[in-house]
Image 1: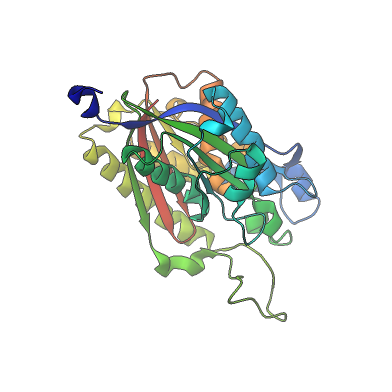
Image 2: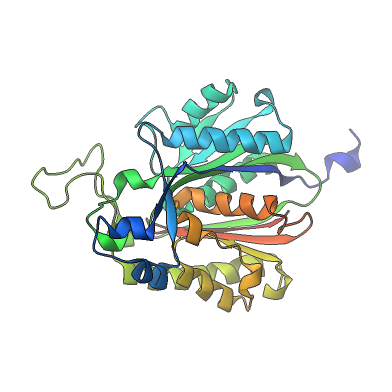
Length: 331
């Protein structure tokens, strides 16, 4: 290798994307039959019209597998070529081994490192950032990054303010080391002091009291407080990301945000002075799929032909923890 070649900067470039949604679709009208709500109430407040629900026996790992296979096919990559698997999820199949390890075995990519990242709805962006660091340091050349969730397994179907929000799904990307521009930068933040505004209080070491109200694996959220904090945090990280790359907001071709609430997406778009025609929105069809949301939206945008090679994309997410993050990349 020549000295000039060895000094070239290495980027993480998206070689392929894939996604998977469970077959079952639960519409707002379906929900209105089991909880006190309506299509108008849900749509006006969230933008969500339907969500997908995993079938009985269908796991996060199942969704991740199908998304991963599609991403690998799109990238033209065999399992033997994968150097690392990073999987973002807050709904793992089992406590351990990690869902990434289970996925690795199922794909036949045995031998490479594989681990989960739990950053709630920011899980995929966190996982993407970790994978990017491995590639930039030369520790990996081909990385499978997945965001997958079965959030409907932890919703309280009697709580109308939360059960209407979440859905199941998975998305994946294959990153490859390349001298062509790919991921330009990633930015991650967290604030554990706000944990009780959006959390699931059940854990292995803490457990739960049987007589506690709504005891069990259930999402609890203070919606209005989360909304306010999310808008401010995403505003700040947008500025941070653009400043770090000496770019103007008008340089962006697409915003691909976490699909939690249409009003939060619209607020971020206004901050960027970006028309909604340049924002990828899937929340109406998918609901909030947590770690699955950004890669699901990315895959749909690419496969639909909206996102084209050479365009500049801003990915961002906000989730329980609180956690939030962004990734700026040239597709």
